[in-house]
Structures are given as C-alpha cells and as structure tokens.
Length: 140
Image 1 (cartoon, rainbow, N blue to C red):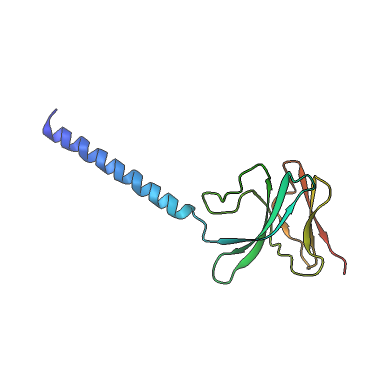
Image 2: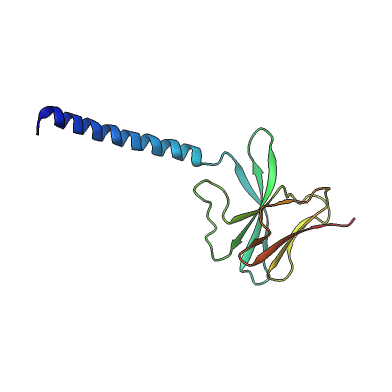
C-alpha cells in the first residue's frame, strides 16, 4: 500500500472516530432532563398491581408543576435514562393541595383525580394498560 493512501485511510478512521464520539457526547448532553422530580404521593390499586404516583416537578426559574405517573408494580421503579420518573405520564398540572383533592382508585381499573380548582388536570391519556383515568371536580 502506498504511504499516501495509508495516511489518508488512518486519518479518515481517526476523524470518523472523533466524529462519532462528538455526536454521542452532544446527544447525551441534550437527552438529560433539566427538571428535578420529587415523589409526593403514592397510591397502589386494590390488588397492588398498578401504582399511581404524583411527582412535584421543578424545572428552574420558579416553574413548578405536578405530574401523575402510572406504572405496573412488576416494572422496575428506576428512573429512565433521561432522568424522568418510571412509568407512563398520564396527567400534568395536578398538585393536590386543597381539601378534597386527591388521587384514588375506584376498583382495579379506574384511577380518579379529584380536583377543586377551576380547571381539571390536563390528561395526557385517558386509558393505559386497561386502567381508565378520570377527573372529577370536588363539590365544596
């Protein structure tokens, strides 16, 4: 092999390796969540197959919200690679603070988010894994 061709191939291989490492580093830097999640409430279904959890989310600059995650008890309770809590996001903007606001199970297949405010929690999905998710306004 000619020395010029060998130098070209070695240089190309080194440049390719450096590009792959740079792309991987950049992708990893953007994949992690800038938010911090704190578990505030946990409610297991009557048979304890499902677990609904409310996390207080702080994303800096004074922005805070409550998110509801639902998961199967048999699934690992480890945070994901992007540092979000385990499970599937089912509702946003739900932080039980007023009297009567809570998260409870009606049987095995219905998860109810009771709220007292003017607006209902924003549901991301109304059904997950055979569990129906509902919102109900608390009468005062």
